[in-house]
Length: 109
Length: 114
Image (cartoon, rainbow over all chains, first blue to last red; front, side):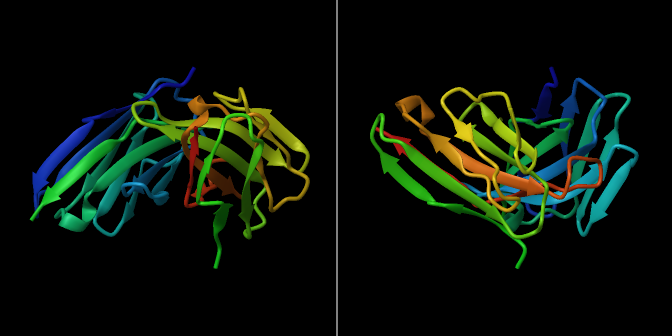
């Protein structure tokens, strides 16, 4: 059974810092991996999708990498801003979508 | 605007009173699914549907029913709700199940069962 783990569970950084969020999964037979952002009490906003054949994807200040063989993905956020404060979720897709528990990020002004 | 919509957004009900949460997408997506999100447990899949008239159980299907009679709609039915079904529910869709297909989520339905 696919297990998805996110480390750390919570992270607090000062504004402007570059940071890395980690996601690991136990079964490498995935279709893709998707990173989401969730604001408190709100829905999920898709940030980046990495297909199983890809190594990384970039969107603005965000860069996500995927290493299927080791079962790892990282989300890199450059020059963090207070508006980046949210919970970040990674999810892997096989026949169903498995989510990690998320990393709660706080960026302090 | 391409979107997944859910109704109602908020619902307070009592044990045993049947309810339906609707989900609709306007993107002609084949794949749709339902999740519940609980503190400490994260998001867990309830049911999913590969296409019209094709549904299957996810991780936590007990106490729920679904139907997929039309491509755009995927309602979640609680025949006899219980307090342990108090949760935040999300509907999601994608064009198909595959490496290229991004999942789009609805805004969520917060359900309280007293």
